[in-house]
Image 1 (cartoon, rainbow, N blue to C red):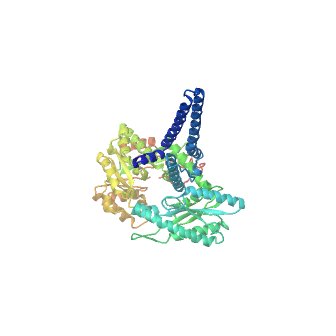
Image 2 (cartoon, rainbow, N blue to C red):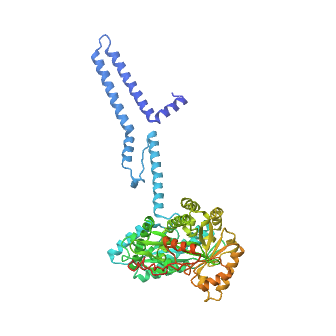
Image 3 (tube, rainbow, N blue to C red):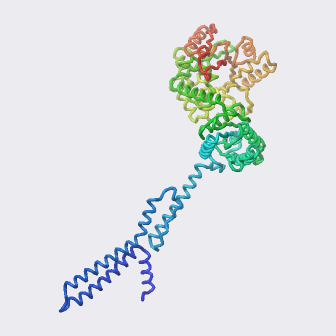
Length: 601
């Protein structure tokens, strides 16, 4: 009889693979020992046969070893099962399971493998879901939309049918999010998604009554504030246009969110397949291109993709690449326009204005490349080049006896750079230009978009001696109290006010108000766009500090400006104006994106 402790020991022995093998081995050895003992007792006596004893003993050992081998193979058979199972395991068989019930470590191992596969299967499902579903809105994402579009377009080509893709950008969404915060922005995105989903289903029933149940339109989020709709089939393209109008109309209804009444809108681009694209990538690109043009045209409208739009996009891409190469090859140079003290008539400074000396088309109008540079994100690097070069030229003039303060325009992209103040200091240090001869011009809109940043970045530069000017003053709708608390030294009166003299009876009063305000704050004033003696006389009489415009000189190349300024400084009076160059003389053969004939500032 086993005691309780013995039974526990025996149970533990039988519940492990090593214990079972040990038990079998001991049992077989006991059997063999017993057989050998009996054989020796009977065969090694007085009349015993030693050969017979050896034969029986050997046979017993062979028999027990064979039994042991058979039993061991049966015990480890589950190992072979697990090995075969794991060798054939793959991502398509993650749902398969091992069924081993041995009551030992092998069963525990099989359960562990099943658990691992179950978790891996769940993880793969989550990864797959994340790959094809937008995690914020739970809508299909861009990749899923592309795959669905691929299949639908193949079907349309084989059946000679027509379908459409609609790209939608939610007008004013980003502005609302930036104003009210990310949390409210996400809540608003949820409401927009719900309304879009309902509008797509309703529009589908109106436009595609026959097929809306069997092949429903697909709504997806493409990223940010952009969505897309895939319409598997329409009778003709006008149906897609009607679909877009119905969806856009639903978004014009106000949203009520946390005591805010928010009015949005939609810019829609429509591409018809297979004529506008024979793959998912192509039809998405065509629809988004049309949407971009609808948005740039003012938003709140729908536009069909055309080959002309595609050509414009290609031309724009070529222009952006040429701008990038132009920056790398130093094709962009500063031209300088004089600033004159209206009281003394002496030249005291200049403004740096960027020009593109294109190797093929000559001087290219800033009206053509500045918008493209802004949209492509190249305006920052371009502005940095002009900032450095302007400081270098002004420092060289100073070494040659001409001390003029040079003003440089600062773009939004430059001012958004956290290293902007460091770049200014580096340009001054490398050129050797005293800070007092350097001026930064920022627009009123930049100043009021983030007053705290303006204070933090510009005040240290101002304390070093750099002058800070607010450009186009009077054209915005800023809080004057907030504006005048910022670190400025100069108000630049926008040229639209100067040009209005003699045409608009309110213009003189507006200019006088700006000059008086600047005087009260001890600011300089620079009147832009001065082109006649009458305008200069009016400004001089009202106390404007400086004048700038074609009356005093057009923007000039650095060498021409230096010669012009030197003569003015030496003689104390304005020299004869240099011949005004037509900056478009060499652009006649330029492609459309470079040949705009608009006036150069």
